[in-house]
Amino acid sequence: MNVKEELLKTLAGGDFISGAALAERLGVSRNAVWKAVKSLESEGYVIESVTAKGYRLAESSNRLSESLILSHLQDRSMCSSVRVFDELGSTNITAKELASAGAPDGTVVAAETQTMGRGRLGRSFASPPGSGLYMSVIVRPELELQLCSMITAAAAVAVAEAVENLSGAETRIKWVNDIYMNGRKICGILTEASLGLEMHSLDYAVIGIGVNVSGSFEGELADIATSVEAECGLRPDRNALCAEIIKGLRKYLPTIGERGFLTEYRRREMLTGSEVTTTVGRETLTGKAVGIDDDANLIVELPDGTQRHISSGEANRTRKK
Ligand code: BTN
Image (cartoon, rainbow, N blue to C red; front, side):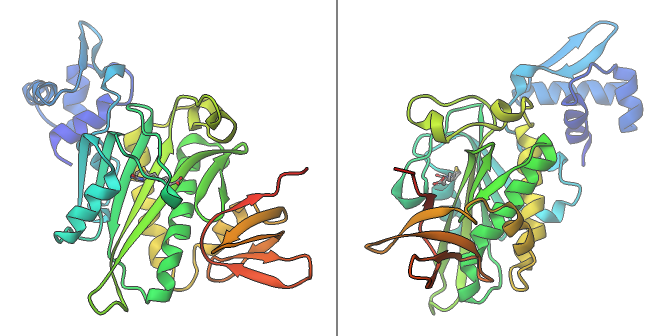
């Protein structure tokens, strides 16, 4: 970490800290601290400076920052680069463009807001500025094609664990990859893959993650969506959360082959045990969700006792009439 990144991380702690204490902590001169403060200000960070108290990062600096995300990653090999944008149509679209142009495994794209945030099954994903974390990660795992469908389930565990680590609150996973807190959705994941020329291997996958960090929802959405802060009263720092998710992906994606993520997935999965309705192609199935199989498919037991292993789509608890 260079002086500027280390300073930014220290100032983001929320408390005032004197120039002398900063110089000592960072192992540089007070003049070097002052220069780094000026350099951060020129990048748009708002740094409060109060006589006899020192410096701190202003609350208005609550913004996504490449330096702050990297400062939370002790092991820099965890991601090859982070690109933060004020506004994008969709981080997934930009990440796919970068991946097609050769961007390496571990490239992260994040945006303060998305004008065309995309959800699963052709839906849109509301992406207002300041209150959410919208990020996409390019991965190029060496995986047999039939294992690739589990990228999204492994990513769900990574995100669930990251949110729990920073909020202290419990999360659940709704098959396949929605993250819930107290019965409402706080995060959605959209994974898009591109096959290699021979079509039997994965060229890359883009894992798009949208976390509602703060704020609340109105209208129809209020019943189904919520934010981490609304549920647990604590607003995780978005830069720290982004870094924690990157760490989680690095931890769980390599375990797909031996299903190392599945215990944690099954422990959090919330449909198991419920009556569910799911659509498979043109067929609508109603039955009891009885578990998650070793390929992360949802096992649904139909009224005639037969079991179906559902590999994609969406399932919801059946509404009582
Ligand atoms: C869903 O809940 O249906 C999935 C939502 C995925 C949203 C994220 S936000 C970052 C990335 N960019 C997008 O356009 N979508 C994903």
